[in-house]
Image 1: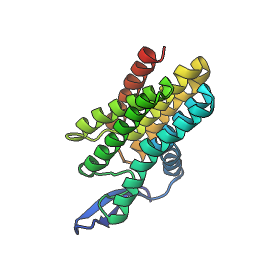
Image 2: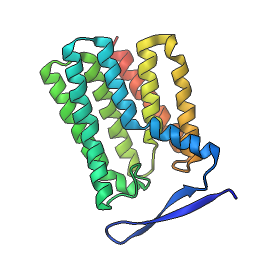
Image 3: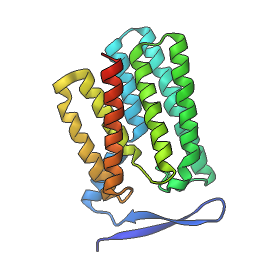
Length: 216
């Protein structure tokens, strides 16, 4: 038997919601692995750590961990707290209306992080990464007021652009991660094709622009 099942959850306000849930199949398992392993928080952490490896030096690693803690772990902890309290449907925040507060917290963390890096004299690559992430998040926040856009697709596209800019043609295989993530999110019914394409386009445009204009 194949098809979509509906999993009913109840938030703390008593509202019952239905999340898309699928009868297990090999392709859905693969799609779930891709989405979980290449989630935005993990990709962002890898990007910052790779930047530290490229820059080298103790100061670079210090700024990398500062960025990971303030710009990634704090927002993730807030989302987990909201999930525990029953304020959101799931970690991916399936429902667009529930994304407003997490977006605002993430934006605030990014603003604090990029300000601290500018004042503290962090290597420029870290400032560029956080500033690009902040810009991308602002655009996604505005879009989210009317339409749901894929953060997973945007994260994968951003990471791919960073690798391509840093390693050149050596990183071309990383670009295949973009269509893989698009397929994953659509296959899991977490987003429509247009939502994933929009997220991918946003990640490519923002990070390519920031890295090309400011890093070179």
